[in-house]
Length: 529
Image (cartoon, rainbow, N blue to C red):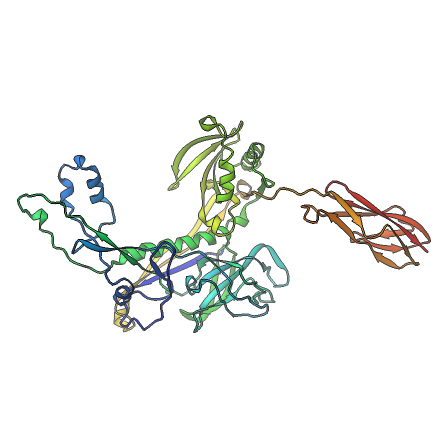
């Protein structure tokens, strides 16, 4: 089993803000996020000069707490910060976006590309990038892989800040040639992959944008005691906020890899490791499932029952499973709830909400079993909002080498004026009993064939010559466009399944084309002279 090595280093402290160029992303919700530079006091004061932390007097909470519920709550929340005045600069750290688009098309045939995207700053070194809708190649590089998208790997950035990318599931004998990628193709950040001895990577550094907040001065006269003799002081932004956000970002991109990662191995150099070493990519569980289910374009009560049957039969698995779905499919399922509190459909009932596995799920209950339903934003970000996955947690395995934490004193090396911490988790997910898990798609509503027409009603072939007939299906966007060709007199003329007619002996034969969908037909009378 290949494993995922995710290395995440948050470095805080620089002797000079100009030592390393900083990519700053401004999320829509406010805040600024750096993806490939170190954050120091210099950075923080430049991007958010009045950044402060607020520490609140905790002893007050012991005074009649049940009479001042909201105040008590406010004094016991985790995020409390100290202020030196009545106007403070509050801040928010937003998350890095997961997707971007290709800004300039990539020409096929290169082994390394400076990838121009709509959001170059979101891609860090060692980042895996999934190229949505562009197929990768199977081992050997000559055959497209219908199950997996192309994946790129960031080995650094050029002088313009464009990610320098290579591939490990591309075309060519070594699977290292990048195929053509059209402009506007969607790119999704997958988990970072580090080499065997690598301990460092680009840090996740969130630099906040500040917002003014006024503090009201409530007043009363009491005897001054030690409780009220607090010393206001302004302090720098602490290490913990950035650590938490960095770990979250790691887990978020790791989540993509756990869903749709392409298992692979390639020896590569990268920005933080100058020696070519093996890098392993873990395979996602999506392609490990043993079953598929499609709603055929429309979610109906009958098909919900069919889904339950698929989920809970033929696998010798449990009767409670998790259904993790995108927002589009969830919307259609929710819209089936027509009877209020009385139920969902005649055969599938909506139960209560329950906390399991650290999440809140809603029960969908049938006689086959119970699905615990929740939405995953990762599926939406992967363009899979109309898809879902039934997971039997009893048959999910996590393989891990555990966490490794490395502390670096970069002040001693003279590189920066601060410390850093490296966090590494080496792990992979695998499914036992593949038939216990189901890939789900909403699918498309089938468009029926209404007719088929040949380009000729009659034709003449001399001797053993050949002619290919052309068939046109209506409508052209029909779902099933398969055709079956046959000859009425195969001793006179034969026809293959591409419509190629070959004469054998003098005479006539009626060539018939029949649509797979609906059995529509047309004929051509062939005379062999």
